[in-house]
Length: 99
Image (cartoon, rainbow, N blue to C red; front, side):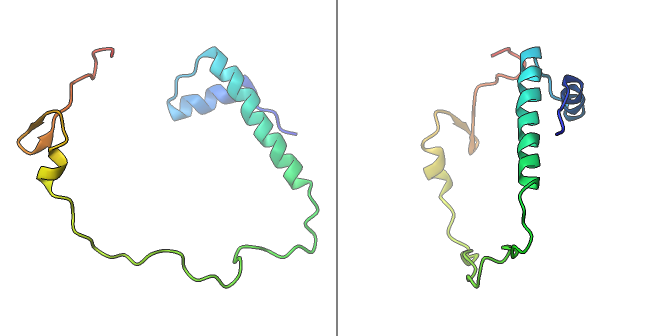
């Protein structure tokens, strides 16, 4: 049974460039450790003689054909915007305002 430590979570967060509050570190330590415990349980299942199920039968492709369709008209799309300028959406500037 592999248990993650708070230091493990801090290292993962640091490498991912995430800031985590102390309570988040505690919560993630428990949450991710529980996931690893579940993998241990799955690993204990006897699969001797079980056939692989990667193919799932002779099903045809469920993907649709890639067909080009007409695009929406710019005027129709921009007509729903509160504010536009030179054919583009305009939105309030919020970067760095703390909002």
